[in-house]
Amino acid sequence: MSNLEIKPIKEWGFNFKKPIVISGPCSCETEDQMMETARRLGNQNIDVLRAGIWKPRTRPGMFEGIGKEGLSWLVNAAKEIGKPTTVEVATAQHVEDCLNAGIDILWLGARTTVNPFSVQEVADALKGVDIPVLVKNPINPDLQLWMGAMERLNKVGITRVGAIHRGFSTYEKTKYRNKPMWELPVELKRLVPEIGIIVDPSHICGNRELLAYVSQKALDLDFDGIMLESHRDPDNAWSDAAQQITPEQLGELVANLVVRHSKLDDYEEDKLEALRANIDRIDNYFLELMSERMDIARAIGQFKKDNGITILQTGRWDEIVNDRVKKGAKKELTEEFVKEMFEAIHQESIRNQTRIMNTITAE
Ligand code: PEP
Ligand code: MN
Image (cartoon, rainbow, N blue to C red; front, side, top):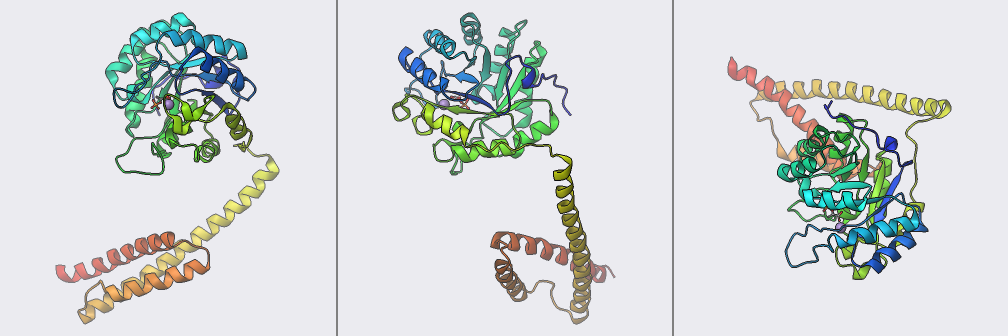
């Protein structure tokens, strides 16, 4: 468990219902772009309007955000549709500008969370201010660093703290821009059960094709909401063009999400219990069979010892794997699964046989 003091997101005073939808452009570009995007989002089901005002770009020379001037464009656009606003802050000056402009929710970007000096600077600027802050995960998969940023905010009195999962940077090329590594936000939720977690499919995917899949996964893992970038003309966006969608596409994506509940009524609970009892029965049977299989492996070990032959006989092992993979395929078990399962079983057999061989060497 953590020592964080967190107010659940549904108690933040915005009347949020799961799934919370945060949307808006990656960057606020012009007054007109902000207003048109917001108006069109106003016809869709969104809860919070986002826009990047200062953009932390990987390489210099790219659009680094419109700056302070854009804050009033965002605030006016949000007023038009009656929604609260959220902006990324990375310095004390950003905080001051946002507070003066009346921004409702702040967020820390991945490149800020990664740096304790920056997080501390933002936290110090927030001393005595009661504003909610969403903390994106650091770019590297480090849960301590993520929670450390939340602790720094806690220490200056901010308890309306939430998390945004935006995936993790990897050297290896994957189909994602930032690998989701779902186990990290899941572990965060285990350690801090009361924390609201928003998933950011836009920055996880880096493209439009996977957005619906990742958004659905976020809901199926029982996270609290999604943050999706939208733009009136995505292809011509000044930043992150490949991953942005139109407000109408956003609306359609959200409408197609299946919201499953995490609690069941008694009847459904009984049905699930019965299925789980069957799983337990099969697992117990499986363990019995494995134990019996290891008895035989030990007998074979004894035989090998008595006849002075090696434990490992590659030919026999290849035969087993090929045969089991073929049989597994007929039963709709993937080759990957069958191979991994038999690899684990084989390792255990070798461990058992080695113990028998070692007894001899010790004698
Ligand atoms: C963003 O939300 O536009 C952004 C810069 O995200 P991240 O900090 O996740 O890269
Ligand atoms: Mn972006």
